[in-house]
Image 1: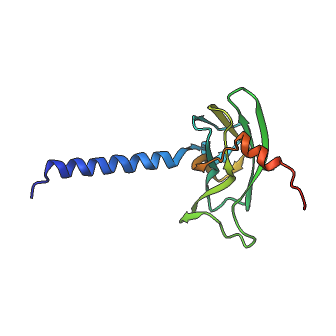
Image 2 (image 1 turned 90 degrees about the horizontal axis):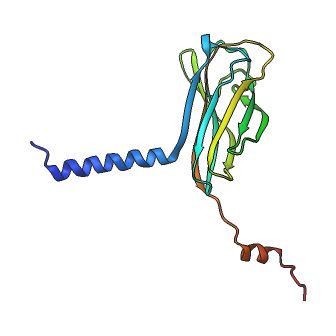
Length: 178
């Protein structure tokens, strides 16, 4: 049976729309391999993200792959965020990887485990432009063995609610008691 042209075009259109929707949901995702699976504190992966939609809300994740031999139940990161105007902030973030019994939270295949850890919910970007996220491992071990990849994932999850001037006045009006 030969596929007819309209059916084929319709299928291609549906596939393109599906791909477009997927790209709109996953704004950014990038992984960086850790050289020799041993993270030296001097190795500082940088993730550069171009933000155009300042009306959106985002969830920001750190992604991590490690071997089963990783000896800690967490990983401490120093994350430096550099804004489009050149200003930057640095935050220390804990990534929990295992429970008290040592069971990994992430998904695993044999001796490799993957984690996607939410570090900021409902984040928003005040101005469009290029943002840089620099990751530094902040553990006692240097180098930190058995870490394979580190990454950043930013998902668009909704829209910010804009407060209009009238709404702000409405909220700030004093209420009167009878």
